Image (cartoon, rainbow, N blue to C red; front, side, top):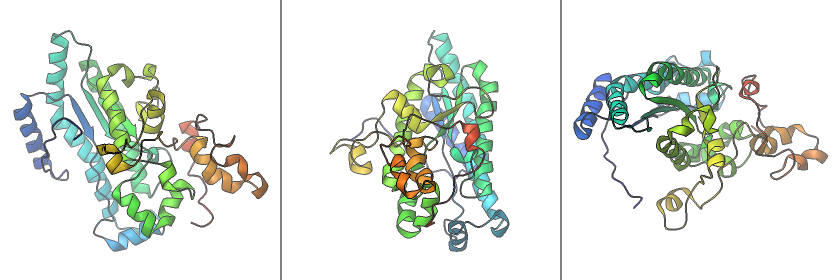
Length: 313
Protein backbone atom coordinates (compact mmCIF):
# COMPACT_ATOMS: atom_id res chain seq x y z
CA UNK A 1 0.00 0.00 0.00
CA UNK A 2 2.91 2.35 0.73
CA UNK A 3 4.91 1.11 -2.25
CA UNK A 4 8.22 -0.69 -2.37
CA UNK A 5 9.02 -4.20 -1.23
CA UNK A 6 9.98 -5.17 2.29
CA UNK A 7 11.67 -8.47 3.09
CA UNK A 8 11.48 -9.61 6.71
CA UNK A 9 14.44 -11.64 7.97
CA UNK A 10 14.31 -12.84 11.61
CA UNK A 11 17.42 -12.05 13.66
CA UNK A 12 18.30 -12.05 17.35
CA UNK A 13 20.68 -9.10 17.72
CA UNK A 14 22.02 -10.63 20.90
CA UNK A 15 23.48 -13.49 18.85
CA UNK A 16 26.50 -12.53 16.72
CA UNK A 17 26.16 -15.63 14.54
CA UNK A 18 22.62 -14.69 13.58
CA UNK A 19 23.72 -11.15 12.73
CA UNK A 20 26.57 -12.47 10.59
CA UNK A 21 24.17 -14.83 8.80
CA UNK A 22 21.75 -11.95 8.22
CA UNK A 23 24.32 -9.85 6.39
CA UNK A 24 25.48 -12.87 4.40
CA UNK A 25 21.90 -13.21 3.21
CA UNK A 26 21.71 -9.49 2.42
CA UNK A 27 24.91 -9.80 0.37
CA UNK A 28 23.43 -12.70 -1.61
CA UNK A 29 20.27 -10.73 -2.37
CA UNK A 30 22.01 -7.48 -3.33
CA UNK A 31 25.14 -8.69 -5.08
CA UNK A 32 27.34 -7.67 -2.14
CA UNK A 33 26.15 -4.07 -1.74
CA UNK A 34 24.28 -2.21 1.01
CA UNK A 35 23.19 1.42 0.67
CA UNK A 36 21.88 2.14 4.17
CA UNK A 37 22.03 0.61 7.65
CA UNK A 38 19.76 1.84 10.45
CA UNK A 39 20.79 0.45 13.85
CA UNK A 40 17.59 0.51 15.90
CA UNK A 41 17.53 -2.75 17.90
CA UNK A 42 16.97 -2.35 21.65
CA UNK A 43 16.08 -4.72 24.48
CA UNK A 44 13.72 -3.37 27.10
CA UNK A 45 14.84 -4.94 30.41
CA UNK A 46 11.29 -4.75 31.78
CA UNK A 47 9.80 -7.03 29.13
CA UNK A 48 8.85 -10.30 30.74
CA UNK A 49 10.10 -9.07 34.12
CA UNK A 50 7.30 -7.46 36.16
CA UNK A 51 9.63 -6.72 39.08
CA UNK A 52 12.05 -4.70 36.93
CA UNK A 53 9.08 -2.97 35.30
CA UNK A 54 7.73 -2.00 38.74
CA UNK A 55 11.09 -0.68 39.92
CA UNK A 56 11.67 1.38 36.76
CA UNK A 57 8.17 2.83 37.10
CA UNK A 58 8.95 3.86 40.67
CA UNK A 59 12.22 5.49 39.61
CA UNK A 60 14.54 2.94 41.23
CA UNK A 61 18.23 3.85 41.53
CA UNK A 62 20.81 1.79 39.64
CA UNK A 63 21.81 -0.16 42.78
CA UNK A 64 18.19 -1.19 43.33
CA UNK A 65 17.98 -2.82 39.90
CA UNK A 66 19.47 -6.18 38.88
CA UNK A 67 22.74 -6.10 36.95
CA UNK A 68 20.86 -7.68 34.05
CA UNK A 69 19.42 -4.22 33.26
CA UNK A 70 22.88 -3.07 32.18
CA UNK A 71 23.49 -6.23 30.17
CA UNK A 72 20.09 -6.11 28.45
CA UNK A 73 20.37 -2.48 27.34
CA UNK A 74 24.01 -2.66 26.28
CA UNK A 75 24.00 -6.06 24.59
CA UNK A 76 21.07 -5.18 22.35
CA UNK A 77 21.13 -1.43 21.95
CA UNK A 78 24.88 -0.71 21.93
CA UNK A 79 27.02 -3.76 21.26
CA UNK A 80 24.48 -4.89 18.68
CA UNK A 81 25.01 -1.59 16.81
CA UNK A 82 28.75 -2.28 16.70
CA UNK A 83 28.26 -5.87 15.55
CA UNK A 84 25.75 -4.97 12.83
CA UNK A 85 28.01 -2.15 11.60
CA UNK A 86 30.95 -4.57 11.60
CA UNK A 87 29.24 -7.08 9.34
CA UNK A 88 27.62 -4.37 7.20
CA UNK A 89 30.88 -2.47 6.60
CA UNK A 90 32.13 -4.56 3.63
CA UNK A 91 28.76 -4.18 1.90
CA UNK A 92 28.63 -0.44 2.55
CA UNK A 93 32.19 -0.02 1.31
CA UNK A 94 31.34 -1.95 -1.85
CA UNK A 95 28.40 0.38 -2.43
CA UNK A 96 30.61 3.43 -1.85
CA UNK A 97 33.16 2.13 -4.36
CA UNK A 98 30.43 1.49 -6.91
CA UNK A 99 29.11 5.06 -6.55
CA UNK A 100 32.62 6.54 -6.81
CA UNK A 101 33.41 4.59 -9.98
CA UNK A 102 30.14 5.80 -11.49
CA UNK A 103 31.08 9.40 -10.68
CA UNK A 104 28.09 9.77 -8.36
CA UNK A 105 28.05 12.18 -5.41
CA UNK A 106 25.71 9.90 -3.46
CA UNK A 107 27.21 8.14 -0.42
CA UNK A 108 26.00 5.12 1.60
CA UNK A 109 24.50 5.97 4.98
CA UNK A 110 24.97 4.32 8.41
CA UNK A 111 23.02 5.59 11.41
CA UNK A 112 21.79 4.60 14.86
CA UNK A 113 18.73 5.78 16.74
CA UNK A 114 19.71 7.34 20.05
CA UNK A 115 17.92 9.92 22.23
CA UNK A 116 18.20 12.99 24.43
CA UNK A 117 19.05 10.46 27.15
CA UNK A 118 22.59 10.65 25.79
CA UNK A 119 23.02 14.08 27.42
CA UNK A 120 20.25 14.28 30.03
CA UNK A 121 19.21 11.72 32.64
CA UNK A 122 16.35 9.56 31.38
CA UNK A 123 14.81 6.38 32.85
CA UNK A 124 17.92 4.97 34.51
CA UNK A 125 21.73 5.21 34.51
CA UNK A 126 22.29 2.27 32.16
CA UNK A 127 19.99 3.82 29.55
CA UNK A 128 21.87 7.12 29.39
CA UNK A 129 25.29 5.48 29.31
CA UNK A 130 24.20 3.28 26.42
CA UNK A 131 22.85 6.20 24.39
CA UNK A 132 25.94 8.33 25.00
CA UNK A 133 28.14 5.42 23.92
CA UNK A 134 26.02 4.88 20.81
CA UNK A 135 26.56 8.52 19.85
CA UNK A 136 30.30 8.14 20.35
CA UNK A 137 30.22 5.00 18.21
CA UNK A 138 28.68 6.95 15.32
CA UNK A 139 31.23 9.77 15.65
CA UNK A 140 34.16 7.33 15.66
CA UNK A 141 32.75 5.30 12.77
CA UNK A 142 32.55 8.59 10.86
CA UNK A 143 36.28 9.11 11.46
CA UNK A 144 37.06 5.68 9.99
CA UNK A 145 34.36 5.37 7.30
CA UNK A 146 33.83 9.00 6.29
CA UNK A 147 37.02 9.23 4.22
CA UNK A 148 35.97 6.00 2.47
CA UNK A 149 32.68 7.45 1.28
CA UNK A 150 30.22 6.45 4.05
CA UNK A 151 28.37 8.93 6.28
CA UNK A 152 27.54 8.05 9.92
CA UNK A 153 25.03 9.84 12.15
CA UNK A 154 23.08 9.51 15.39
CA UNK A 155 19.33 10.06 15.09
CA UNK A 156 17.48 11.46 18.09
CA UNK A 157 13.72 10.94 18.07
CA UNK A 158 11.67 12.61 20.78
CA UNK A 159 8.95 10.79 22.73
CA UNK A 160 7.99 8.10 20.22
CA UNK A 161 4.42 6.86 20.57
CA UNK A 162 5.22 3.17 20.28
CA UNK A 163 2.82 0.50 21.51
CA UNK A 164 4.86 0.34 24.74
CA UNK A 165 4.54 4.09 25.37
CA UNK A 166 0.81 4.04 24.60
CA UNK A 167 0.38 1.18 27.07
CA UNK A 168 2.43 2.93 29.76
CA UNK A 169 0.37 6.09 29.43
CA UNK A 170 -2.72 4.06 30.21
CA UNK A 171 -1.28 1.91 32.99
CA UNK A 172 1.58 3.97 34.52
CA UNK A 173 1.13 7.59 33.44
CA UNK A 174 3.59 8.85 36.08
CA UNK A 175 6.45 7.17 34.19
CA UNK A 176 5.55 9.08 31.03
CA UNK A 177 4.82 12.28 32.94
CA UNK A 178 8.46 12.36 34.07
CA UNK A 179 9.35 12.88 30.41
CA UNK A 180 6.51 15.13 29.28
CA UNK A 181 6.19 17.26 32.41
CA UNK A 182 2.57 16.15 32.67
CA UNK A 183 1.66 17.04 29.09
CA UNK A 184 -0.56 14.89 26.91
CA UNK A 185 1.87 12.66 24.98
CA UNK A 186 -0.41 12.87 21.96
CA UNK A 187 0.49 16.57 21.69
CA UNK A 188 4.23 16.26 22.32
CA UNK A 189 4.86 12.74 21.00
CA UNK A 190 6.01 11.55 17.59
CA UNK A 191 4.95 8.53 15.60
CA UNK A 192 7.65 6.04 14.53
CA UNK A 193 6.82 7.12 10.98
CA UNK A 194 8.34 10.57 11.53
CA UNK A 195 11.77 9.13 12.33
CA UNK A 196 11.56 6.97 9.22
CA UNK A 197 10.69 9.94 7.04
CA UNK A 198 13.62 11.98 8.36
CA UNK A 199 16.05 9.08 7.87
CA UNK A 200 14.72 8.62 4.33
CA UNK A 201 15.48 12.26 3.51
CA UNK A 202 18.96 11.95 4.99
CA UNK A 203 19.53 8.82 2.94
CA UNK A 204 18.33 10.54 -0.21
CA UNK A 205 20.46 13.68 0.12
CA UNK A 206 24.09 13.35 1.37
CA UNK A 207 24.29 17.14 1.56
CA UNK A 208 22.00 17.07 4.58
CA UNK A 209 24.34 14.80 6.56
CA UNK A 210 26.81 17.50 7.59
CA UNK A 211 26.34 20.61 9.76
CA UNK A 212 26.23 22.66 6.54
CA UNK A 213 22.92 20.99 5.71
CA UNK A 214 21.29 22.66 8.70
CA UNK A 215 19.90 19.56 10.45
CA UNK A 216 23.05 17.98 11.94
CA UNK A 217 24.88 19.26 15.01
CA UNK A 218 28.42 20.60 14.65
CA UNK A 219 31.58 18.78 15.60
CA UNK A 220 32.21 18.17 19.30
CA UNK A 221 30.92 16.02 22.16
CA UNK A 222 27.37 16.32 20.82
CA UNK A 223 28.33 16.27 17.16
CA UNK A 224 27.00 14.14 14.28
CA UNK A 225 23.44 14.20 15.69
CA UNK A 226 20.22 14.86 13.78
CA UNK A 227 17.23 15.61 16.04
CA UNK A 228 14.09 14.26 14.38
CA UNK A 229 11.68 17.02 15.45
CA UNK A 230 14.07 19.78 14.39
CA UNK A 231 14.98 18.13 11.09
CA UNK A 232 11.29 17.60 10.32
CA UNK A 233 10.56 21.28 10.94
CA UNK A 234 13.47 22.46 8.78
CA UNK A 235 12.59 20.09 5.92
CA UNK A 236 8.81 20.50 6.09
CA UNK A 237 8.27 16.83 6.98
CA UNK A 238 4.92 16.13 8.62
CA UNK A 239 3.73 13.34 10.90
CA UNK A 240 0.78 11.00 10.41
CA UNK A 241 -1.04 10.93 7.10
CA UNK A 242 -4.19 11.74 5.18
CA UNK A 243 -7.28 9.54 5.72
CA UNK A 244 -6.98 6.26 3.87
CA UNK A 245 -3.17 6.31 3.76
CA UNK A 246 -0.98 3.90 5.70
CA UNK A 247 0.40 6.77 7.77
CA UNK A 248 -3.06 8.09 8.56
CA UNK A 249 -4.53 4.68 9.36
CA UNK A 250 -1.67 3.69 11.68
CA UNK A 251 -0.49 6.98 13.17
CA UNK A 252 -3.30 9.49 12.99
CA UNK A 253 -4.11 12.58 11.03
CA UNK A 254 -1.63 14.57 8.97
CA UNK A 255 -0.01 17.09 11.31
CA UNK A 256 3.00 19.25 12.02
CA UNK A 257 5.74 17.39 13.90
CA UNK A 258 5.73 17.68 17.70
CA UNK A 259 8.11 20.21 19.28
CA UNK A 260 11.71 19.28 19.98
CA UNK A 261 12.27 18.12 23.56
CA UNK A 262 14.88 20.87 24.06
CA UNK A 263 12.58 23.62 22.77
CA UNK A 264 10.35 25.93 24.77
CA UNK A 265 7.51 24.44 22.76
CA UNK A 266 8.04 21.28 24.82
CA UNK A 267 9.59 22.58 28.03
CA UNK A 268 7.32 25.63 28.39
CA UNK A 269 3.93 23.89 28.79
CA UNK A 270 5.62 21.18 30.84
CA UNK A 271 8.14 21.81 33.65
CA UNK A 272 8.46 25.58 33.07
CA UNK A 273 4.72 26.21 33.39
CA UNK A 274 4.58 24.27 36.66
CA UNK A 275 7.48 26.33 38.06
CA UNK A 276 5.69 29.64 37.39
CA UNK A 277 3.28 31.34 39.82
CA UNK A 278 -0.31 30.47 38.98
CA UNK A 279 -1.04 33.95 37.64
CA UNK A 280 1.80 33.70 35.12
CA UNK A 281 1.33 30.15 33.92
CA UNK A 282 -0.55 31.39 30.85
CA UNK A 283 2.81 32.57 29.50
CA UNK A 284 3.90 28.96 29.08
CA UNK A 285 0.67 27.58 27.67
CA UNK A 286 0.91 26.20 24.12
CA UNK A 287 1.14 29.20 21.81
CA UNK A 288 2.31 31.50 24.63
CA UNK A 289 5.55 33.51 24.56
CA UNK A 290 7.33 30.99 26.78
CA UNK A 291 6.24 28.06 24.61
CA UNK A 292 8.01 29.04 21.40
CA UNK A 293 9.12 25.94 19.49
CA UNK A 294 11.83 27.94 17.71
CA UNK A 295 13.69 28.69 20.97
CA UNK A 296 15.93 25.72 21.79
CA UNK A 297 18.23 25.13 24.73
CA UNK A 298 21.87 24.26 23.99
CA UNK A 299 22.56 20.55 24.42
CA UNK A 300 25.24 21.47 26.97
CA UNK A 301 22.47 22.98 29.10
CA UNK A 302 20.41 19.80 28.78
CA UNK A 303 23.41 17.91 30.17
CA UNK A 304 23.05 19.72 33.50
CA UNK A 305 20.23 17.38 34.49
CA UNK A 306 16.60 16.54 33.82
CA UNK A 307 13.84 19.11 34.42
CA UNK A 308 11.92 18.87 37.71
CA UNK A 309 9.35 16.10 37.84
CA UNK A 310 5.70 17.21 37.59
CA UNK A 311 4.05 17.77 40.95
CA UNK A 312 1.66 14.86 40.52
CA UNK A 313 4.32 12.38 39.29
